[in-house]
View 1 (cartoon, rainbow, N blue to C red):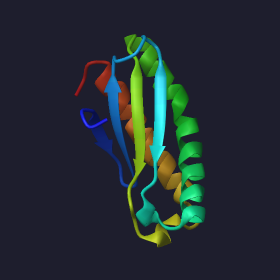
View 2 (view 1 turned 90 degrees about the horizontal axis):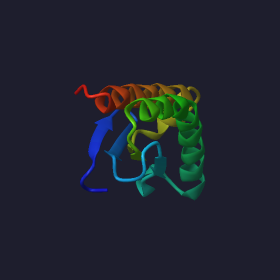
View 3 (view 1 turned 45 degrees about the vertical axis):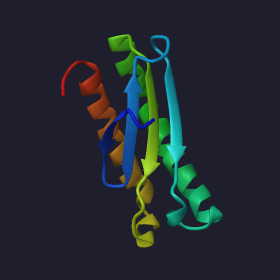
View 4 (view 1 turned 135 degrees about the vertical axis):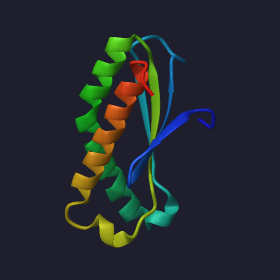
Length: 112
């Protein structure tokens, strides 16, 4: 998805394309860099990121329904200091995802 547009938060970067599939469809992908740690750490981070995205999907679906477009998004976790992954990291991911969802709503409705 090298031709997509991106939105970056503190811990998450989203690359997205709109309008390539049938109207109203939402496709989501997740990537975790190997620099984040071993398989156990990466799987834990994937679970946390999936949970944060799950909470943001209703807002994304409303934006898609309102504008009548399709949306493909890849959420990429940014490599950060491993001390960030302690208690409260899910809250930071959720706030990043909420920020990205709000920005996508604005951009899909015609704003910049």
